[in-house]
Picture: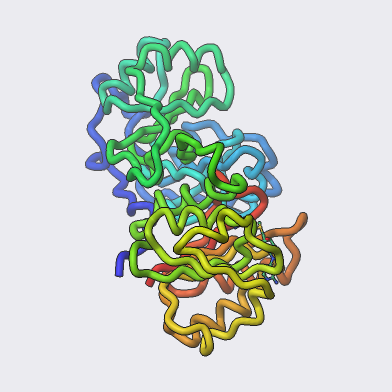
Length: 360
Ligand SMILES: C[S@@+](CC[C@H](N)C(=O)[O-])C[C@H]1O[C@@H](n2cnc3c(N)ncnc32)[C@H](O)[C@@H]1O
């Protein structure tokens, strides 16, 4: 069974990337972990930032990019390791962690002083061709640097086309004369957000984009001969995606599927509660999809029954969140995260919700 794609482990140190010509000691990769300082709390940090020199001197660090509007959730998830925050970028002490709220993780971050716009562009081009800028300030200056870099093709993906294989680095102008950049990132997409050639005619809603995104980043997708349970599947955006891959779809929802989706040959539908189906009576299910609107603890309870039964091995579930994360939600998220072989992630198509995935 294919493992879920996690951020690749980071090799810090000189071997992690080729040195840019003219790289000064201050622009070298981060210092070794032995110089890790005392903890620095989120509350004390607020939105202020440590200087890059100070961050680099403290030891290995990782840069995480949040989706627009979710930097606070990411900061809370990082906790006391947070060193600096300039939305949407957050810098945290230590090697990369698999954080649910990180839309893109900069796996090999470097800080470099720059003498000029041309100097910044030269440094980046000396490392690799493809770069994406994540501006956090000094916007005009950052745009002038970006203009000097090779253009990166921005063609939207035509699902089920695979994600691009070429590495895409990320950079920002952290200060007027300080470049922060990472040749390797967890996502091959600018800002960690794939853009698709949308179908504005056929699907019944825009929920299909969430599944397109998820199935583009997973190492495995449903296919012919497989049965997908689509819980809370009305009006049928996900069912439309799954049947387009040749899989059979059995959809359970209290609400009806849109009739033209319900009529598709590979789609079957049943009106009722997703929580009423027991795995023992469901027969052989290859994939369980859930987009049911419910409390995370209720989803967890249902998933525990399916996992204990053990027949279905692939799960893709939206975890709907309320306003403030209360204790029950936090406990449910921790329990989901702790399920072996699983991942919690925030897709760019997720609003205030997460996606829980397990493929083994
Ligand atoms: C966000 S919508 C799902 C959209 C769907 N994935 C699509 O692609 O079109 C959430 C769905 O959950 C359904 N739902 C809420 N509670 C449910 C329950 N207990 N059992 C089954 N479906 C439920 C709602 O009726 C609604 O259709």
